[in-house]
Length: 471
Image (cartoon, rainbow, N blue to C red; front, side, top):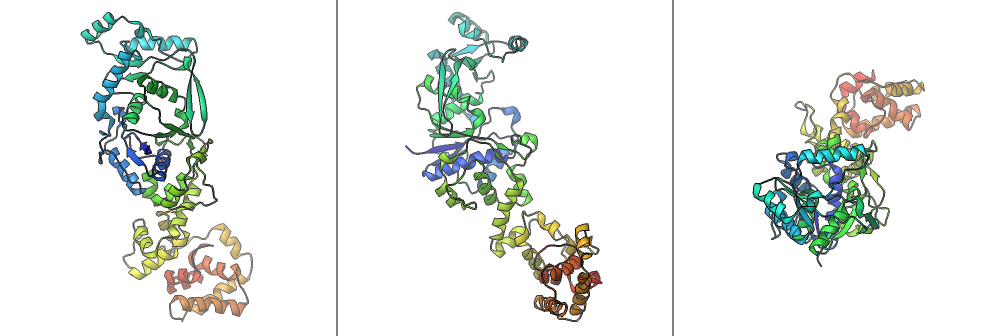
């Protein structure tokens, strides 16, 4: 049996990284077994749909390097792949369940339902629909339908016993049927509910593995009862623990957490984002951390998905991004970083700009950071922080070093090799080395205690500015 996984986001805006992490697992699983990765758009909640969101989803998956085998733009005979275009399909199967006695028409008004909720609240009980419409006679049902009374179709749940859910990560889970509500399958507007549409679509699209958040584990009992009502084979379930934000709460775009496009626009490389997110809740057999896509696919083992929640850490993401930036070929790096570099360089040569950007290649965590890192190359006056001032005052040699260096560079040819020779002359003349040699020069010239190669930095700042700062 060919493995078929599906990524089924709602078109409600940019894709948040918790949702993308699920897509990554689904993609890796499909590719590991030479299966198919399907994109399905779950737009049954029309009130939350954001214009252009489907394009965002496609753009995100494309940037991440995911090849979509089937989807709205690539129908392979299982479509439509957008749920709002499948309404007649859901209606047909909902009515089939009614005929089988596994579902029923419910004509209760919103006022009646609110009364039931209020009674449940008064008893401090969770609201469960009492099933009163399941006891209507055939004649009454026909009468209501003939009158055009609005209705929903509800699933008829067993009220005793347990339903067993088998999950690849969590094993067998027993759900007490008495807590299962007679859930709505088809709403009064003809749209299916999320749970019902998922089951119908997963079966008709021959999905073999369903990966989703652990928070839906208890809901899977309802899914299983639907599969059993139709006599269909269940897919393999893989529930994954949540990705928590840095504040310890569940990641969510509603809470303002970063989306993939937010990160991309800040200058995070898609491959680095995918690499980092793949390790949130999954661990490879080795200690390797940086993976190509092919390496992720070959190393992916779904049984190593963790039961524990993982926490999003932007510092760790920056570390991954830093590795990818460092490993870029210089020409590719320059083309990439110039999208984020907004300094006015109209009075600079192309060589000067390229050299400036290249000396920060090994220091950069994300694209937009380049403007901050290079700030002191574009200001007349620099600010030296207290830590740097304390270092300069810690040893009388620091003043000697800067004075000696200033004299050394006054009349040299202005290139990196000559500047390096000047630094070595200071070292030999004053018998200093290490940070006592390099740091005073760097602090006085650039305002910073740390940075790229000192001679490159001095060269780019320029002779006149460096001498002025040193004096």
